[in-house]
Length: 237
Picture 1 (cartoon, rainbow, N blue to C red):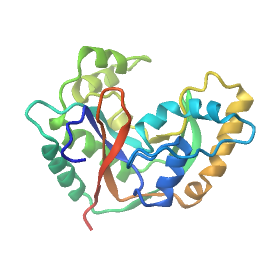
Picture 2: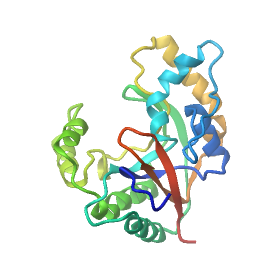
Picture 3: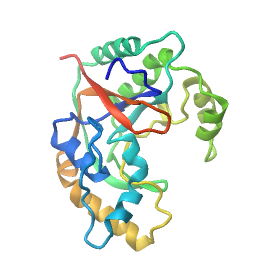
């Protein structure tokens, strides 16, 4: 997909597409970002499949991932090949594979896999993605600035939105692999049931952790479309 004229691009952490960690997340969300195939979801026995599909609809569009550089349009004069060269250089600047200890938790109004403890190597990778890929990113249109400003940003976050196109970067970066959309339609009991179901489903990752050895390139071919896996750039050995 390196030669497609995509609408937006993003830098993600994602497990290797042939790994068990990839399959666990893709099945939970109901779509494989490599190829776009719909997958049977692990619906709790006490829920209707359509209800579970609705709760996971929002993260399903973006694919199984944690954002490192938020989606952006290519700057005028840049081609996908130029962006790929930046990804290659970025990945080559890291030679340390490291493990993330994760758990299921509520983040704001959704469930996600989150870190059990801070991880400086991950912060370094996230910072590099923001800073080193930014030359390829076109300035955000006012409508997108307004959308990303929702929720009440601190002055520092507003400044980072203006500089980097996203408010939750650098010191404010928080790793999360989104599992659901908004939980407003769920009762407290249903939310806890869903969290327990997620902990059971992702038990292998909670026990073994997630290894970070690469940065992944995802793209959105058309505005409002699904994000698809393009390529994974392994760290230098």
